[in-house]
Image (cartoon, rainbow, N blue to C red; front, side, top):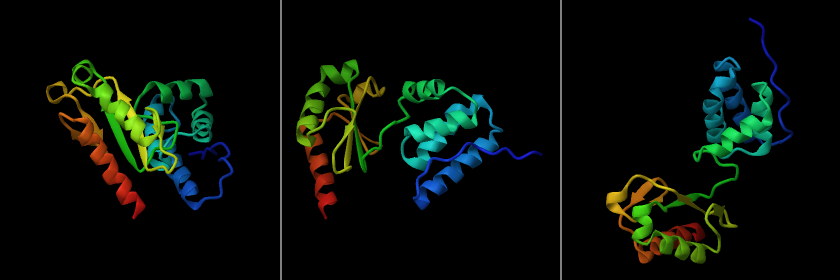
Length: 173
């Protein structure tokens, strides 16, 4: 079987980056460079690199012989992909109808003020990424906030601010 040579890797001298590209290469090869595995390959890339930067998107596009616009379109269409590095902690506020009616907009506003960032941003110290979701499907326990993958039910402003302050205190240690 003929060995394919992938496109040139971006010039980054970090050993972790090299290992991440090795992981990505294995996934691309395992899927035989087939375009229909784009989502799986992007998922692997995000796991390996932490997010999908332009260099990684270009690398995948070249390896799969796809236009960059197609790869970028898939990466931006699905909420599970991130084009920016995320913080050590993630906080996702549900803005679905049930949560919104029960005050999730006030939760988001309080978090934005406390963290000095807007939704879909990360604090300058890379500690917290604040995100919002259209609906998390947990309407019976609204308002819902997900802290590092853990669902917080019937949240109040005091609840969310306490959680964030705990993260900040641990980050200072």
